Image (cartoon, rainbow, N blue to C red; front, side, top):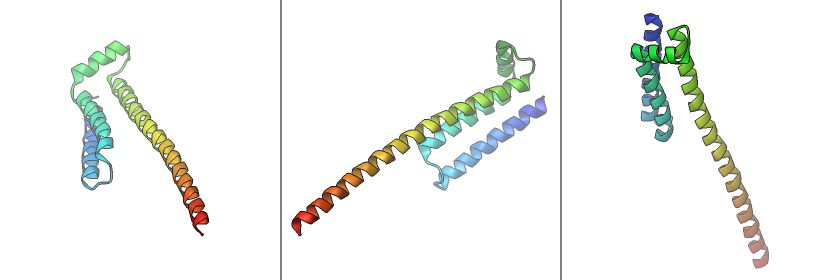
Length: 117
């Protein structure tokens, strides 16, 4: 089990490094990287704090500690994905509204051009 927790910690460290490199190279915006950094840090802390993980396992009534870490990892990343789904949905709605405003402006510009000619 310790081996699994070490692998989990290694994956979290890898995710932290990847996010930081992506921010540095401007592949990901800072406001979105914060969510990934918090999620990876939380999972890293859980992987390294075995007594806390054991407490959570007992609290949830799970038979095995690795099951607890994977359940928590799944929950954390589902929350991250849900947050990004909300952001994408809002951006899509904003794009539609912007396209409509541009179309209205183009219509008015064409109408003004017709009146001037």
